[in-house]
Length: 231
Image 1 (cartoon, rainbow, N blue to C red):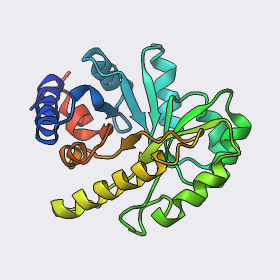
Image 2 (cartoon, one colour; image 1 turned 120 degrees about the vertical axis):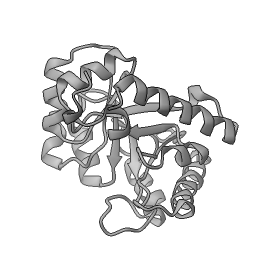
Image 3 (cartoon, rainbow, N blue to C red; image 1 turned 90 degrees about the vertical axis):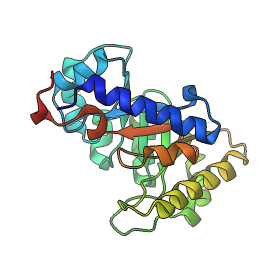
Image 4 (cartoon, one colour; image 1 turned 135 degrees about the horizontal axis):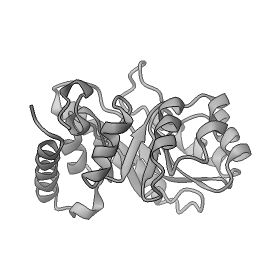
């Protein structure tokens, strides 16, 4: 059974190779360890291995981990959809929110946040009904609405590609998000510098890097499964 260190070595080699193929710098890529399905103990192993960006997708999971992990060197990323009534529980506990896609959530952030929150807008590039997110054609209108909320800074866009072996389809989704990001960045909006791209998971992060991802969210391929007991 692979250990955490072995998995990290493989992932790092693949990241480096993807950067080389696309002429990018390794330092431009932030690896977020998605720890939503593993214990505090496994999460602490990930931290000891040198990863300081952690992703959770449920308020209970986030808050539970934070009760045990109090290091101020950790960047906490909330990567799941959050209900309006739960915003107050997490918004001052996270460094990045990857799933802003509704004005109702924006209003709650504005009301509850103690300081400005760095947010990614979730965009449903693939058009799949099963996925959340703003429709691409609605993005600029959504940004205009957000301009009245000074507690929200849109640092980038986020999307998820279809779960498929069709690499051309995956690549087209990531490429489309990059084009949207560039269009928004060109607007020079004070509240939306929009320089970042959160895209790519365990099965497609190398493609995402080649298409411009700055933040990749890796779960099982990095943290493994709790039943492995690889210590």
